[in-house]
Length: 267
Length: 267
Image (cartoon, rainbow over all chains, first blue to last red; front, side, top):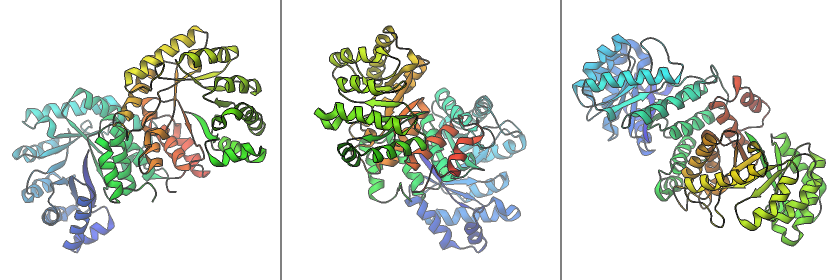
């Protein structure tokens, strides 16, 4: 399971304040705590700053890569910000995200083909959010077709089935679970990735629902997730699910995480 | 999801003491709290008493059915105890359990065919515990064949895939998950049931692992579980999984359980 640490996102108040104040220590610490908790990528997102986003995102790339020895997930709705940020990145980043939306696709294609990187690709038709399994699978297949034709290896593509609230439509959970299963079965080698928290929008006990949804997504074959690796209950779900699915020989990772205090079932 | 409340089992100290003391109030209260928490059946098991088991089990049947308006799951390794207990039961009980083991099968067959009941059937070969998916499915298919030939309707058979510790063999989780999926796909109408807690034997954070395993089993199609319905965290997992799997229209059951305090994500 590939973990993308989600905490350095300016939609969080403390991060926005630290970015504005150019607080290297604070951002470095949030990067380090995620790395220590098991993140494989650190997401950086300064999307809330709009006109200042490009500069801030580039600054975040520098600061975070000075703090931790990990690749980053460069995360922006703005292709220009991604094009600039990637220039500051050492090693092979993950780019979040490309989609079939024409303008976005054309602006990002040169960025993601210019040098080796991993690409998050959103399973949505050109302009509308997907509802069914089929819509997701179809958009995913189209993206894979286009991106592999451009020379991006299948295993560097991370399809995001786009999680939507189960409170809005009871079928939104199974639509994502079905899409993950179908994609992972039909396209061996490709990756799937998603954020979890949208699933519980509008409901009580959101962390619990998100945790449970992670377990179900993993059961369907999800290979990566954007989440908070310092959330000990969430990580307990992740590691115990890995164990229950037979991916943790001698239950070693689970027991080690328990002994080191990285997971918790209580608080 | 059919819930069999597991608490009235003399392997628990407080229950054993109450049974020995013939404490009607205590047993009635444990029955009632499970019924209020959502149990559909109340399991009664006095198996630890060996030579006194038959009398105690019959007493439990009377006491519990006086306390709650629910059918019971008569639970014993001893066919004789089940044969006696069923005589005291009003309505249609669940009998736990029959298996291919010759002596047991022959002793129980007259009991489970004498009057309408639901039958838990263990997916094990005659003498040995199952390891693989195939062993479970094969034993399950054999049992279904035999029991339906005796006139027991398919939908009254509850196959138990027999959960074994993942700490002993990393494949024990997927063996059960695969067996549930295979049985539920291939034999539409049959039920599957299991206890959860064996999965986590020998590991830390057992409740967490059991909860997560429940979610995965439900995803594979499990239709019934023997569990403690007063465990608010476990019930939170059960209800949120039902919701995420699209089985809770308008998220009504989940929200109602939250509002009434029947579920918890914290303690």
